[in-house]
Amino acid sequence: MENLLHKKIYLKVFAVLAVLAVALFVFAARDEKPQVLVFTGTTMTTGYSVKIVKNSFNADDKSRYEKLIKKELRFVNYHMSPYKKGGDIYRINDAKAGIPVKVLPQVIEILKYSQKISEMTGGAFDITVGPLIKLWGFYDRKELKKEPDLKEIEAAKKQIGYSNIILNEKENTVVKKVEGLSINLSAIAKGRAVDMVFTALEKVGLKNIMVEVGGEVRACGQNQKGSFWKIGIENPVDTLERQIVRVVSLKNSAIATSGDYRSYYFINNKRYSHTIDPVTGRPIEHGLASVSVISDDCMTADALATALTVMGSEKGMEFGKKHGLKLFFVNRDKDDGYIYSETDSFKEYGIK
Image (cartoon, rainbow, N blue to C red; front, side, top):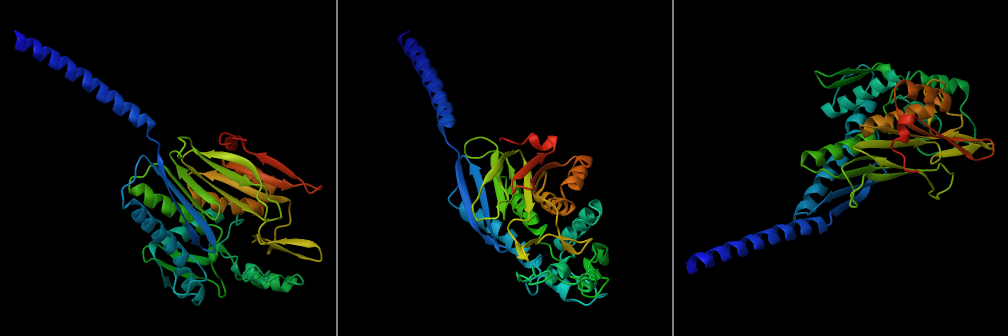
């Protein structure tokens, strides 16, 4: 009888201790703060930042993730740059018209998608504007003393056109139809780099990620504070001073911004933007200073932001509403101020 009583007391004590252990585990889990790994560096003549949030990291996680990030960035920087000798885009540009150039499937993919955006935007987005960029001095950052004449512009326009690129997906080859045509992926490559890094990290099981390359961002999950990732949109001021005009909360999505306020010059007090309209062959001259686009992937957001900048505010907003895009526009007014406009779908992501 005494042994039975002791056994009952023991079982009760064990049960209480078990409950306390579970309670302590629950409270410890609640008090456990997520950790964040931050990776920064330079790529494609700009900076990048990657943040990964987890409850805990293993000793080798940092080096493993860093290798993944740098591998994807090196690929884009080499094969999608017109300046890297031996890279796929360099070799395409260096080849004669009519000669097939063997490239990697990833390069075929981005070229095909670029043509899709070009068709969608009626040619406002065009990766072949290289000759015009060079003509206007933005290829080598040379400020011109006078405008190119009409003959020079028309001659350069004969060397461009997204339809002058022939892709053979089966053979992974690219053929240029006209001599002098050159490809420049600067309006889509940063977005593509973001997507490639993001996808690589997702594939290893990460759930809370923020990837940024040159201001183009894609994020999923939550930040270290347990909320959606907060991303600031700059006011397009013509100084080095950074002014945040809007903050958005990214919910498993991407955002890219294009503007005319970081690269430009003046000729006789007239401003010339680095954004070239492929149709006119001239820098854009309307009052749209910057465009921000939220999309599911960053490559799409990046390309559309450029295309909408070329279109201008009125045409761009009309296009955006037609296609259900999430857009935020900043226009210059006559008094050197700014006018802000956005689509209803963009407002869902706004914080202020």
